[in-house]
View: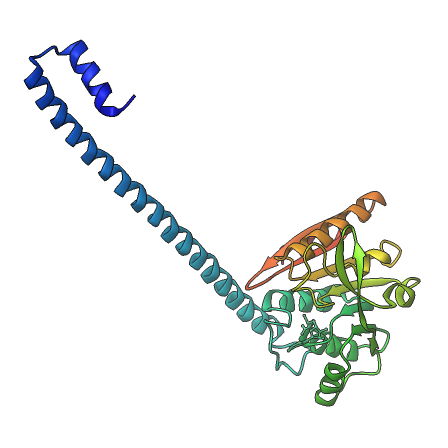
Amino acid sequence: MSVKQRIKNLLKKYLPLPARKQREIENRLLTELQQIHSENSNLRNEISSLKETLSGIQTIILNTNSVAYENVYANVFHDTTIESDWLKDKVFWPGRSALGYPAMYVTYRILNEIKPERILELGLGQSTKLISQYAASKPAIEHTVVESNQDWINFFSNSYNLPENTKIEKLDYKIIPYKNSDVRIFDGFEENFTSKKFDFILIDAPLGVDMKVYSRIDVLNILPECLDDNFIILVDDTERLGETNTLAEIRKVLEANSISFAEGSYGGMKKSTLICSANLSFLTTL
Ligand SMILES: C[S@@+](CC[C@H](N)C(=O)[O-])C[C@H]1O[C@@H](n2cnc3c(N)ncnc32)[C@H](O)[C@@H]1O
């Protein structure tokens, strides 16, 4: 029934008037209603536009927060390493392709306080500059870096002197199917590391930005045998779906093997997530 008809019926029912008067009141009420409708529609548009603005402001706040956290961690990293016994070359370019300051800080604390001796690092770069200086401080440390890009290895090796106990393992990328999606992995990773044990694994490769469902799954093939009793796995870029899904798979393997663990995340402009043996749980709140 039209609005006009409803008004007519109501007027007839509750306010019977002469026909001319009734039409006049009907028209006035209809005009009022049309105005209310139009105001209502304007209000709806305003609400929708305000929602968009709010969502934009929320994005800006989130971005500003992540920049603020990155800066806080940069300061904390600088203060933490200021009088380091082993970190002498402090020229770093954290962020973008490299680890951000939160992960650099956490990595420094792991190295300095837990003193891991068998380190597996996936992805050569700024993190390698940090870990290799730690490796140089103690010959017993075995530090292996897996990298796919020979040009990057050449550039890096020409720019920095790596110690004897930091070894670069060059493995090409390949794409394999995994749980109904394609994933980039290091070709030969499993064969190379299957019988080895590590107390610190840093995962910042293969390239994961274009991975749709899973990313950086290499370690799954060697878990849990590759872990020492005291272990730390640090995964970078866990704000992304691929890395988040891989973390879930890591948890599943640990749980299936009754290995107790603790987990924590460190966020700045990107997020890094640490999974460690339960006895090292303080590492989740550095
Ligand atoms: C996420 S990066 C690993 C970076 C390393 N963990 C670090 O902190 O710098 C992954 C891969 O990107 C490549 N890569 C490293 N630095 C790069 C850069 N500045 N620009 C482009 N690619 C880079 C290397 O092949 C590396 O294995």
